[in-house]
Length: 161
Image (cartoon, rainbow, N blue to C red; front, side, top):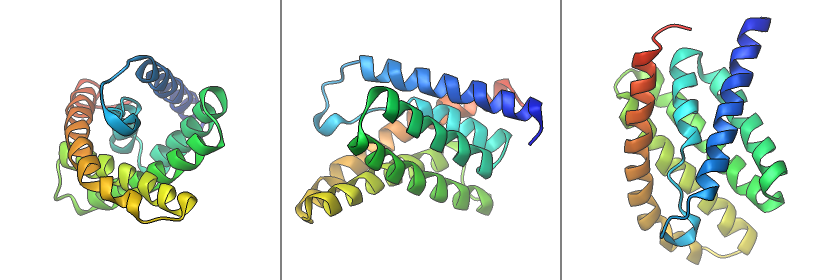
């Protein structure tokens, strides 16, 4: 990777980390620690402006650093699973060229929640936790729409980097 690209991706990673911190400061009256996923605006942007490899790297670095700075090993496990499934699915859907930015973001939001639920089921050795998936699918869809709209606007504002 060239120095300019590394610098740009590092700045985007820092912005995503700041968005994670801001999101943690905003108390939402939602159960199970549900969040909007503000940092994913940056991940969607990077997926479209740089590519899937760069989006995965920034997502991984952000998850690790935010977990080290503001979380713990459990937040790292949940976040890594969610980020991995989210990036994998968004990359696959983007490659089909059948989905809009918003549709891809919605799928990313839903599968982020699915990844976290899988980890919870494994760590707690029970499938009963998966009963919250319908609620998480609804919230993931709403959050995915909001993140997708913001990502789309950001992509339109900065067509080339």
